[in-house]
Length: 220
Image (tube, rainbow, N blue to C red; front, side, top):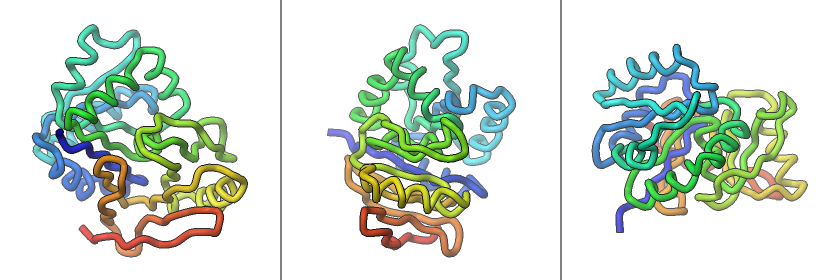
């Protein structure tokens, strides 16, 4: 049975350390970049070719506009890492579901492809996430459910994230994990296995109805 690995990243200041960490978990360095949440911004896609090239990765990208490629499943399964960018999580999930991409991702995960991403690309793997998809007030969103519980990215990077997540969980939202920028949480199967930090003082937090508890992070 191949290892099933997900890397949830709160956000980036400098992507290099966390990308290097993620690539080190994969069976190879073929990366499929999926910028659905960011409206498939061409400039960003081109920029990521440069970023990942500096990490020694071979990158391809997946755009759903004007339609997904005919070989969608084969393309995903032919990579070692699926890297999902940030943006509007709700819109991204709607596009994925209508094209059956959510089920392809589950198959890829089971086959040993590392699933990774930041912001929208971090929370999408959980049962639920905290998102600005509907406006700056932040709201809870049902996500893919590969991982149990909920997640909140940018935990220390955006002022409203921490208090809003705490409020939502206190009011019955699934408990879960708050992830600072420059921090990645690795899941082996559905269990958290390691937290790594690329910035001094940045970490992740277990959040439940009783509040938050800081978790130990290994510096990169």
